[in-house]
Length: 86
Length: 203
Image (cartoon, rainbow over all chains, first blue to last red):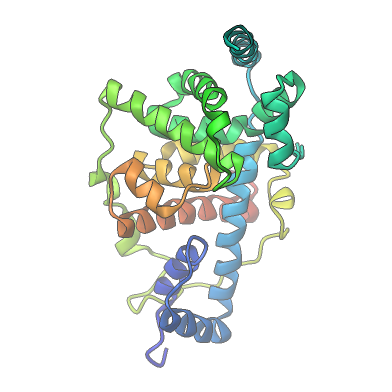
């Protein structure tokens, strides 16, 4: 596409752009590509949504009662120790 | 599922004042992220032990927290450090050999690197909308577990742990260009899982 990055390259850049800013040249070339390529625009939206969905999924895991109780006990112990020390 | 944690200053003050309710709120809200960060480094079997140790370290180090990052990012770094220490003891080996997957010959692209076939939009434009089906949660879990260790670790450290690329490089002992590749391949894999679920309604 007129010396612009391929769809495959743009898909990689769409992921990279979620983590850090692209260089000026890459950003411009990607933008031009996206203006002309609906599928890459869609991919770019999807990879962003995928990132958010993974966090949503991870945060949805609930804490087992046993580990919850152990952490709460540790928390209490820490403060008892802290009180005794001061 | 959406529980809001108060601002960092409020949380820190409450934790220092032995506020068990606040501790419970933060501990439960961040558990998922902590679990997947820990398990991506040491495996699921000892992830909870790592979390427990991490909370003890957090409480010890809290008076020294300087607020250079968010409290959650700081806690996540403690989790990954604890996990890494544990990983060294267990002598597990994350190898980049697993990087040889099918990216070079991905059938979705033609030889010029352009899309072979059109794809369709997803039915929703928010994670809440996308993740409505319980089956998709299980499906994502299944496919994240199937990722090569290094991709899974990079993905969880980034998305669940909100680590910077530099931090991920240090934890996984790989170069920054490798981390970018690992992240893209892992995200792309999960994107394809969601795509298929949207298209066919199955995992």
